[in-house]
Length: 454
Image 1 (cartoon, rainbow, N blue to C red):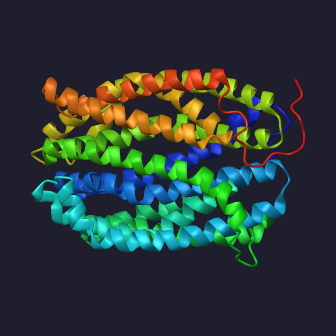
Image 2: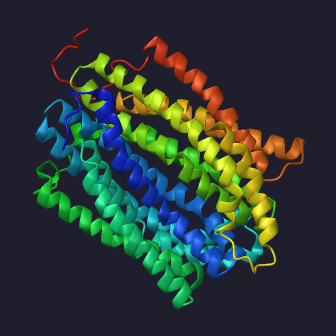
Image 3: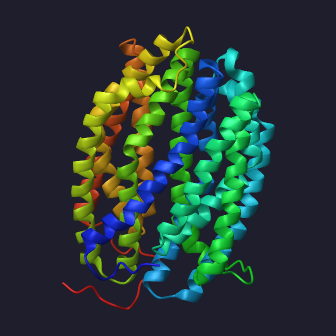
């Protein structure tokens, strides 16, 4: 555990974000491994099936992950305020709530998978593969939820290294199982799904074992549902869950647009999006580190220190955003080709679709840096509502812009690429105004009696 209420703020944020960055890199290997291996060993259709499925997976799982994010804010504030008993009851309450909800969503998702795919206008030639992939993933939805929950709670207590070690192990296991099930056993896209679920289930067990043995604050001897604490947990969780759900719904509409361009466009977009997510990981890691830093300091009543950490983080993220833009613009096309088997006759078309999208979005990572800097600060300060509003607004603008650009100017997947910075830029302006006016103050769920010293 790490106390961020004293010491060098810039150094603490950077050092705390590094293990999370490495963790995010390995986390992306989860999704990249599925896409890479099925694309190389099964074909472009299989790559399209995995890509077409992920928006629905994110929609159904995203709400649950959002609930863990909201609960981790309360846990971080409890830790900063030295309220250990409240912290343990918060953990217990969130576990009970998430267990029941994840089982319900798993059942609903498994039953209605074919219906969901039809609504997304999934190309018929990849529909069966998408169903087989989704049903395995959704049937084991509880494993990634609890795995991510314990990872988030350990980070909320300032422990970013232990989750990293578990994640590295899980990623290596997932890649190994991907190769075994897809390349050796020839199970196709279902094999990639089984590899993901098995590796996440083992990771979940390791997380729970480690937390119970080495993190006393997460050691729950008796599970109690605390209705009083459930209110601030829900207050922070629901906006995060709604944010992810509505965001994922917007992504579903974008997926439907991509599907309308055909299976080759879906395959190219899938490869490009994996690389795009990979490039943004340093920015996401710093945003997550800032949330924990701000959460602890706001819980301790140290507003000025929280704002100081925000300033450092914004600077770091802007520099990294420029560097990642240069990197992706120079190497994007070559990296996309790694996902495609060169013997596939459709390989050139897939690469063109992916490169068109990536060449646009990679120019605007500085917009993402600014946007996520504000989101990280607001989330740590306990103002989950504005984070939800900004993110939903950004994705709504993105979806509307993508459909307009595709229809008005007859663009392909690059229409989606141009729509993204429009959303980031406009919502960053709103975030700056909100921050400058101080509307985020007094949103902390748990605060110590210590006053901020100017």
